Length: 68
Image (tube, rainbow, N blue to C red; front, side, top):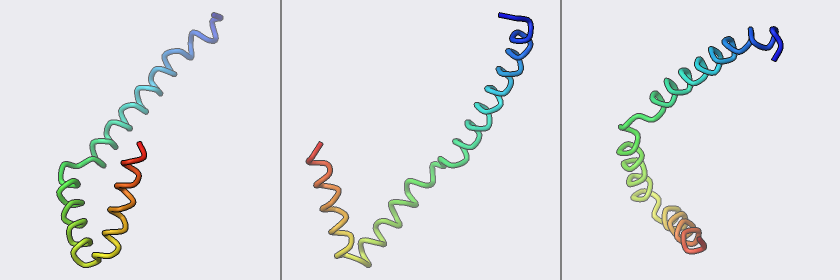
């Protein structure tokens, strides 16, 4: 390595650490524990109000599952 390459190594590590920290913070923000029950409730309401569409989606999911 030359002297120029050695001076950029700490800067690269700082940038990588900064991106890791930002990603970790955003991940914890967007993955709230409340989202699973909220999605379940919205799914139940959707299926109660739209039985035909819900049945179509269910059949499609089962078809995909059986093809694995």
